[in-house]
Image 1 (cartoon, rainbow, N blue to C red):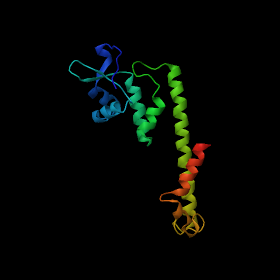
Image 2: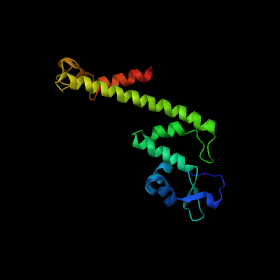
Image 3: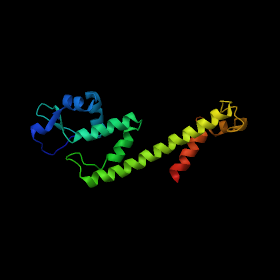
Image 4: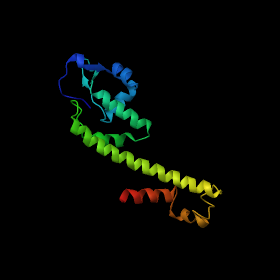
Length: 160
């Protein structure tokens, strides 16, 4: 995504400078731009230049990636934060509230997984197929492949 707002040349960073400042590879920066997570302006020679306020966005994308949060989710949370200027305090607060909700949902899903695994390991059989407690007579096989109970719990929480 390209920004249209004018910037003074000294306010702009090359892709190499952005990479050094953030620890993110140039290829990843180009990918994030293709996804609309960050934006650049182009020189007459079509080289990317990044405004300094993009440092914060790249840092947030990096943290989210390390936490295993899909980039599409990051885009949804920060989609309303402007890219052509430094966001206002109120704009960051709105994005922060959305981010908090996303992180809370993820935390709850991880806790449910931990609970399910603890229960399964605690019974000693270590087999969902043979487990008389969680899946008597392999009854869940008729409902489809995959972690059926955990998916049901996650879907129930998402609807609540």
